[in-house]
Length: 393
Image (tube, rainbow, N blue to C red; front, side, top):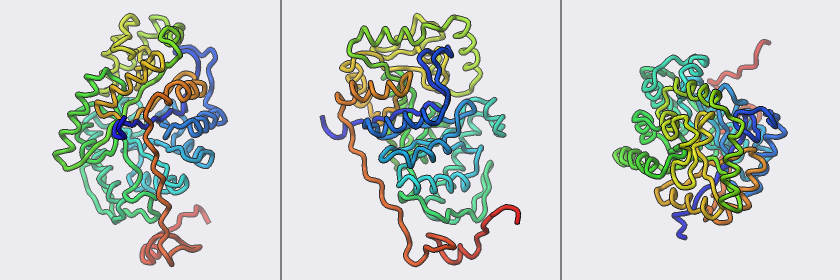
């Protein structure tokens, strides 16, 4: 298989909890950090390139967890969420540059614009869907300039900054790579303008191909190239029969009332991607196989990624290669429970795939003569004008 068809496997840190059944607390695992560390360290040693840390009110904070995982792992990349509107561009850039340096260049940024108006309002963001993406466009314009080492004055419709400057640079020139998920026209425009890797939830190949084509057209018009990834749960076993039996077991504790309530709540979101996930099954447990080895059962009650690749290792690998041929390079995978399933996927599935080599992160740059007790890699003029906030004195 040519190198261009190699994939980048990622795993998932379940900061909202874990368990053995969907919709049931029986056998549930709380978000105890010692368990999350086990999952992260397993992914690190099993050959996953990185991990996605989710964000939202039902999750532990992704930045704090990533900061704790960084010194406990060696090569694992950390895909951490930035929330435009919830945080300022400069504050987020400082966090990112610091974690990038602490982790030795292993930070990746997942731009999460948000699709739940209620959750956004709780965080103080009161914008309609397309307005949120317009704000994200301004946020990322400032972000890119900060990561390039500029001092930024910017006044847009939603964000205004004056004299914004990132004094401690990230490891990678230009900053950590940017990821985003989104299916709307507004999301595609932001992706084409700013993003390195476009993530999609796991739709059948025709839907994924449609998304990829739309983003590529927009990116080419701006002279940019965007790479692509997909988010799937995975249920892989030695045989097809065993895998599908596990899929049935995973939703065996769900009743129709629980499904109906979950679908009603998900319908309130203004996310186009979430609407596409719901449309795959319509809340009907008899319509869950949406393509060979693609099962929408997780989406009966879970928001966001609602599909799983289900089957024998041979057949799931074949399906991944089908998506890879469309242009999907990064596969962000997960399974219930996440610790045990990380081992299953690594032992059964990954050996059947061509895995892309992981580049060595560059070393942090230190400007000669500017490191010392009072500062680091920025000019004496900037150092003299900077204010160190120490709290009450």
